[in-house]
Image (cartoon, rainbow, N blue to C red):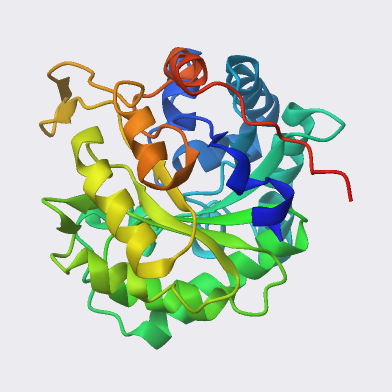
Length: 302
């Protein structure tokens, strides 16, 4: 299991940052419903370069460009199911190319929420009007396609509510790949307003889930969530918030405020996979690396 291979008991392991902002900084347009997944079709080498920027900054875990990918979205671009499965696999392959050969780096296949695929902001609201079963039927083919490509783990990320979490946890059972589950939160609750203790508890007994936590939130939200996730689940915690700037619907406002400023406290509270999300670029990951030091990525002898 990844929790043993990464030796999360020996110190924090550094995740990457926001793939989209690194691509945008390199001049790539990300408008449209496929977002960064469009480059799986149009320019996979751009993804390799973006991933490598995070590896150079110290990231040990690289997250694939599949967050907003779906069979339905690719179909709207004229790509059939077989071709879409190949694109899911390509997302893992280009991330693996960026990490390079040898031990010490891992690929996490991103499984974004249903709302991300809608491209209407509803991943920050949840409550789509779908049942757990309907959400499971949406996510299962994505998870199966990514798992077949051989990532080291799955990132079930930016989950806004417990209904979607339940669906993802059903879909990941038997996939043969360990996973982390991370919610996007606001005001100490899920984006849909549910208590975090109950949200984290859903994953406590799911063997495939090796870490639970939060992402795509303000850095100031993370500390309490880390402590709660560790207490409720007994699992290692994953934490990768945004830069701390705010989005007013037209642009980013305010001042960046993390995550490097808070990271030591998160690790003391139980965080073992730490990185950044929106607006946290390679410089932010390098700051985290300097603050946290490098966990020994090699398995212990024997």
